[in-house]
Image (cartoon, rainbow, N blue to C red; front, side, top):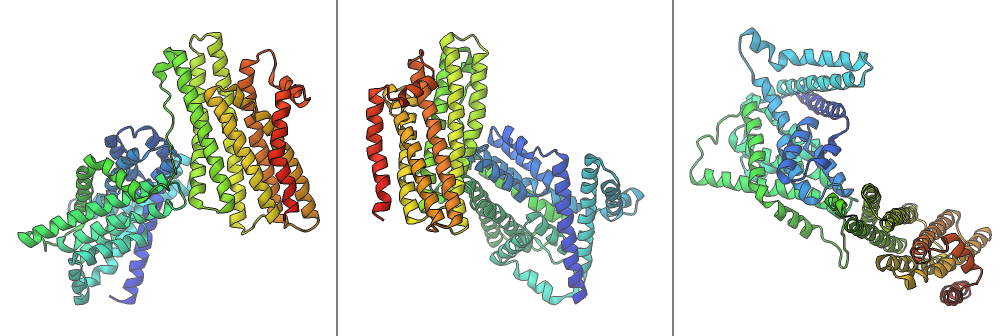
Length: 593
């Protein structure tokens, strides 16, 4: 094999990979970007997930692509791990479609019909028609069809180039010896893994093996380890994609890895055992493209059938591998809002309130975690915060839709008022979540740009974080238990927070003018103060609505005006206590530094 053959082989591999890539991309575009929506809606059970994973991977021609989509859906809370298992299994089957297409190249015969359906005859025609559609038409649909046809033609052009480049290897004793060594299962698996990781596609590595089959040295004994190694290798791309994602997203990628590794190891052990004990008569039989495609498909189907009863075990293994930190509770499921209960509005309202309470808990949990990021930034914690915020957004939509459906039924006046108030509470908690994510982005900016607050700013912010966390805790307790006494403690603390932010802002601007603080972290610090004020304001709104339910003679604005005017002795006493607790230490920060 000359250096020119090596160059031709590299060009063939490049064309093969490019053709497969643009064909899959065109198929995905033609589907209207609905892959994620289909996965989300139609994975109610594992069998359905397997079928969908098979179908979608067959369309986009990439198991890695499907698994990366699954990782994204799990990361955003749309799919849970159990739903993801079925799609992952199906993806392994769907990715074998490429090999079955390539086997068409083995069609041979002298008749006109057989000649016409040979890829060497029709693939250039398909590529030409695809190029015309892609280049000369403006319709997106026609351009996508053209891209698919062009990719199909380029894929086979690359395959034929690879076959031509490796043809001299038939006469190479060194190459024959190399392939004979791959009958060692460990070496074969490593070779399959290495090629698949390098080209980022098990379909491509199997396609390369199909091209090598024309040399006559690919037999059952060396093909099986390579194919099973390719199955393992394809699991590494989703693992990379899951880095920095939520723990459940990482678990979905780990499930894919475990599924491929365990099934490949078990199959390889059984086959090697059978050959060692009984001597398989077909062990040294030379394989063609069709045989390789069949082995690839069969191993994937058998793996799915064998693991189908053990999906829960795969999920458990993933949870044991990617563990929650001690004390960390990641309840990241969507709340149950059963529409069958709409016929009983009172019961449906209670279910909706429970869902809003879950929103409140998650928003509070996010705030606590974000505060920790200012002391020690952690990308995994940030990913979990983002995950919860995405869920808060989805929960607001789901709960609001459910409450509107309740109001469409016959409800009493008090039930109608409760629907209206819960809608407002839902909005308040969603906004708290938004401002909390703004705080997280401030912490991330400090981390990414290697900035830090000054010592004074850190002490001031610690006092503020504690006060705002307490405001949230009080407003949540008031909402969960309709506790008027807790609600009445919120407004004086909110006023204290406002005053703290005002004092800190003035002091900080003074330090900036005096050159005692750097400009970049100083701007971030001002953003932190603004977001803390906004969170505190929304907590005040929540408490005011709870109090308003009990004091219907006063609207929230009128009541707040009277409180600030000093007309309520209890409010005055609570405000004085909070000032002593927070403003006095705040004033002493600069004195003790």
